[in-house]
Length: 319
Image 1 (cartoon, rainbow, N blue to C red):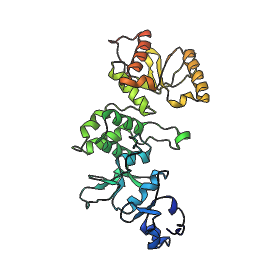
Image 2: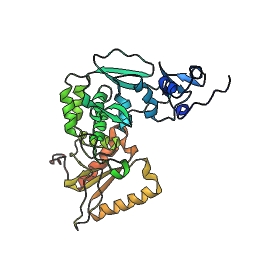
Image 3: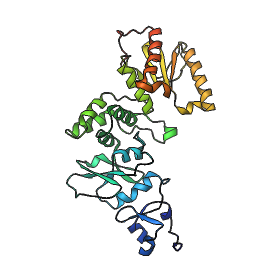
Image 4: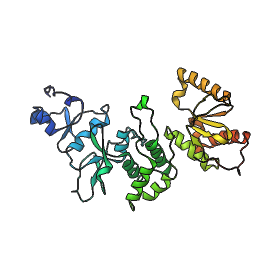
């Protein structure tokens, strides 16, 4: 096979449309070369695109398909919301939504959902039409569990950290989620969405924190508050626990894998000292405590609460 002529610009590094290649002066013969593969009518790609960002991989599919927007798990990934990770052995499939009544569309590598879609349920993420976070959350109700849906909802309504995320507003509010549920009565997954809606809280920073909170409440422990500011008896501000039982001065911290890093260990020690100064009890939970429906985590938190005066018949703290 003869060495092909180099493609112009960024075309060698990502999928592209035939129309885009034609505008760049690429010949039809070059597009038929074995160094490229067809990933659907009107779309070509290098032999491997594994390291290409999702936004670049999905863009051509939306450019050649009018009236479509990225949706479901594809939209969740583009918005940075929690989603099930695709296994390396699974074929890559993009999810797009198309208004009901639009012509049927059948393309390789694309799952097309035809459904009722309002104009205000489509936004843009990195220049691509994509369902809004609230609509994405509702669409995910079709396939994920209630707990997973709560985790996505928590991520939607979470207040971001501007210095880290470059935004100041949450993706949406609980009221936004409630409105979209009310708008789509009878939609597949709507009952699951209604249940999840009542469990969503503002303040969870990760799916693991959400799961821990759900397991604690499910085990009959008080309803906690999330990321509230601790103030010690001397008025000094202490840490902001992931999960706080304010009435009992018990804070729960979920520690991910990064907590083994040296700098994070130093921060964790300082945080523990701040708990002691504020006369609060710190409970540290890791991945190993979450096995078997978080039985070990529940036991640790229950022990701390009982030591602080809680009893199963005590009044719970409102969120």
